[in-house]
Structure formats: structure tokens, C-alpha cells
Image 1: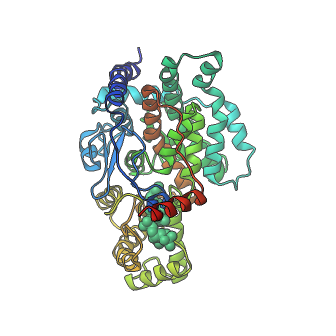
Image 2: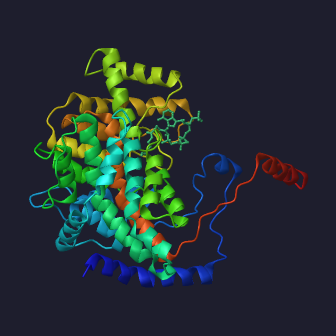
Image 3: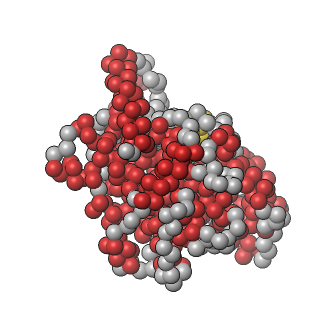
Length: 440
Ligand code: HAX
């Protein structure tokens, strides 16, 4: 018996009935008003999505099913002798809505390990690509190649009943999450480690096995970092590009493989997930330009001003929703303080934190001058010896699967329809402005 699947059915069934009744009884409730400026600023602040897995507050940061990151670090089950939460536990929390027991988490680790077999044609597809192909491009191609395994797509082709969507979707989601670390590690080892691949160890938890297959299983502290990393990157409510894309593409009943591959193309953008590689690239370039691994605050300020003058953004700073330092940044800073005695790059990251916010604030247009998750993550990976920064967004993607695919399941359980917002032309907009003026 698959207890997680049964449990999901048990909670999702009454929730979907409740949701249907809620809409039936309150469907004409006005949710808010929005302005023309919001339409032109990426629909910021317009409520148009239901996402159960997490909720973002501009001042406080993310809560996963009501729990902050410090609370998750305390309450979620850990590996034996571990201090950081196991991402399996966060997946359970996001999917079911309650904290898991140690047994729940162990069962998910074992289930994902059992499902982790990747068909050979996926590796062949990867091997046919030039090694210079960006790892995120390799990642999305591999996920699309894996779509041959979709139970959802096969059942749909045979004429699946609507009531069964979430059942087949569940199998795809669990198989895909089980397989992602294997695919990601394969990309890393083929791209940077001479094709010397490392077989999975099914006895390890999901994060530890990923660290092992990447070749960092024996590096003290890396498994610990991986468990934290895979937990904090998992979800950031529904409107961010990767979550929204999964939801949008899934609404066409594209299966979880297709929806997730699409979302990873969005994560690969430099204003979203690729920012983690951009941050470390920018820091390395600054260190090279200044000829020191330990630039002073004054030197950093000059370099930041140069970056801005060249018409570029300062990577790792700013956010579309947050208006304070990202708690995911703080969690990584605490991890470094607890586990790492001295590191030039990490200390440079902290010095940048002192310098950048006042400079961005002084521009008068940046809504959030504070660091986001990507400002810190690369420096921790560099510390443990993973310097190939082009790969970092793939690791982000492995983690992001947990949140967006749990949401995909809720979308199918709620029977969410195809998403289709209205668009208008600028001509239409001008006419509306003119008629509003004429009637004023
Ligand atoms: N450096 C320089 N300028 C910045 C800036 C930064 N870090 N952040 C915002 N701005 C600028 C914008 O480019 C915009 O300028 P223009 O009006 O000239 O176009 C202006 O300030 C207003 O932007 P905003 O409303 O504050 O920010 P947005 O909501 O439009 O964008 C971004 C949010 C995160 C995309 C933006 O802050 C940015 O580009 N940051 C750097 C890239 C980055 O770190 N991205 C990762 C974000 C977190 C994430 O998704 N991780 O996956």
C-alpha cells in the first residue's frame, strides 16, 4: 500500500469538494482592483492563482504551509545525526499540509530511491549534446526525453476519466522527483568530470544520494548543505516564473514531465534561477578585476557602481515581492557561520551585503534593495569545491521540483481548468483611457 498516495487522496478529496462549494457560494466576491501600471509591471500584486504549498509575505518572507524556514529547520525530521531538515519532509508537508513523522520521511526516501531508474535513451540524448551545452539546457532536454515514461500521458491517450487525473499525475510526479538527482548528477559528471559517473546508493536519503552521485558524498559538510539547499529552494508561492509556468502548462493537461520541463526553461532565466550562477560569476570577475580575493567595502562599492553604469543589474539583489532580506539568504548565512570557520568568498558575500542595499536605495527606483536567496548560495558551493557555477541552477531546479510538482497535484485534485487570462492591444488600452477621460 502506498501510504503517501492514500493520505493525499484522503486530504485532497474533501478539500476539492470544499473548494467547489466555496466557489459556488462566493463566486461573485470581488478579489481586488488593479491599475494600468500593474498591467505594465508584470502583473505584480494581482491575485490570480491558488497555490496551497506556500505563501510569501513581503516583509517576513516565505511560509510553507504556515511554517517559516527557522521553524522548518527545527521541526522537520532530520537524517540520523543530522541537523538540517530532510527535503522529503518538506515535500510531505507541502503535499499533505501537516508535519511528517520520521517514518513518513523514511518511506518517501525509500520510494524515491525505488523510482530513480532513468531509461537509457535519456542518457543517450544527453550524450549526443555538445559538452559545452549549458547544463540547464541539458536538464530541460533530459526531462523532455524522460516524458516517454509519463503514465499520465499514456492513460490520457487511452481515454482517461477526469476523476483519475490526479492518480496518474501522482505516479509521474513521484517518478520524476526520484529521477531528477540522477539526471542532474549525470549532467554534472559528463560536463565537468570526464564522464566518470557514480552509481546511486539507494540506502541514502534523497539529498545525500544527490551529493554522493555528484561526487561530493565524502566532502565533510556537503551532504548537510545539500539537505538545507534542497529544502530552502523548493517553493516560493505560485506567481514566480517556475511555479507559474508549471501551473500554466499543466492547466493544458500537459503531463508533469512537460509542465516541469517548461518551468525549468523559465528558471534558466537570469532574472530568476540563473541569478545564482550570475552572482558567483560577478564575484569572480570582481575579484579578478581588483586583483584580490578580499576586496574592501570601498572597492566593492566602486565595482557595484561600475556594474550599474554598464546598464546591468546587481545579481542576487532585489525581488518582485520581498521587501526585506530573504530568510533563505539568512538561513545560508547562519549555516556558514555554524559550519565554516573562514572563507574569502563567503566573507566577500557578507561585505557585499553591507555595501549594495544603500547604493540600490539611492537609485530611487529599486523596490527592494535587499539580497535574495541567490546572493549566498554559490559561495557555499564554492567553499565545498563545486566551482562550476554554470551548474548551480540545475541544483535549484532539482529542489524547485518539490514545490511546483506538489502544486501540480493539487491543481489536478481541484480540477483546475485551462488558464487563459485576457489580453488587449495598446490601441484598446488607449481607447479605454480616452473614453474614461471623456466621461470624467
Ligand atoms: N540591480 C540593479 N537594478 C535593479 C535591481 C538590481 N539588483 N533590482 C531592480 N532593479 C531595477 C530594475 O531593473 C528596474 O529598473 P528599470 O525601471 O530601469 O527597468 C527598477 O529597479 C525597478 O525594478 P523592481 O520593481 O524593483 O524589480 P522587479 O520586480 O521588476 O524585478 C528582480 C525583480 C528580482 C527581477 C530584480 O530585482 C533584479 O533584476 N534583480 C537581480 C537579478 C536577481 O537577483 N534575480 C533573482 C531573484 C530571485 C529569484 O527569482 N531567484 O530565483
